[in-house]
Length: 203
Ligand code: JB2
Image (cartoon, rainbow, N blue to C red; front, side, top):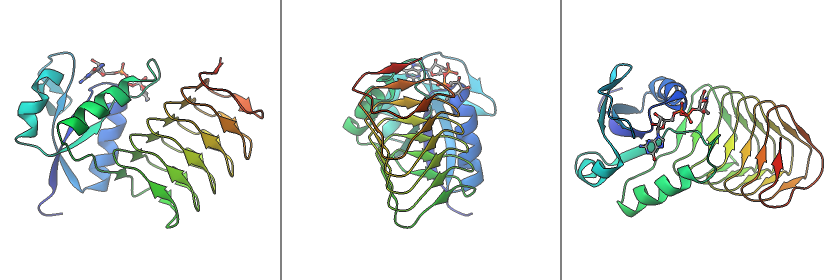
């Protein structure tokens, strides 16, 4: 594809590895470099172009950014960075693997990445700055708040509601119509069949 738009990535760790693969496969954006806390020179074949302190300088050159940090350890880090990027007026595009299925009647917010083989079914609404990781299933009429991470192979059945800043671990299954409160953490492989209040931890 000619004239690909340039994008920078925030965070150069494990989640960046798989996000880069999605961006390269989608082939809409050219990755110009990464911004990380650590001042390494390279992350695989891409340059580390600075730290968060350099973001306002970087914005003068590149308009598009994606946060490529998962949020397994800290439920609010992605939100903090997202607010910073918005304040600096970065454009935060939706990144969507061509290997994912996203229903035409689903809505997806800015800065969200839909990774390979994820399914977003009819009438679902996904907030901004989310990760719908590889092979996750988001069934019909699901609502996911902002800054959530739905991990690899997790299943959210029809009508589930996930509060903002929540993390749903790999292979977890949430029964239909269940509501999970904001900033909750559900460990891998859990089966959730009761509503959870805010800041629940299912370990
Ligand atoms: O405030 C920050 C910041 N905090 C950590 N600003 C910036 N620009 N970068 C930050 N980082 C950087 O994010 C760290 O220096 C590190 O390079 C990266 C996080 O890498 P890590 O591999 O620890 O986490 P991850 O969230 O990218 O990946 C985990 O979660 C994914 C969902 C891994 O376990 C992956 O295997 C998993 N797929």
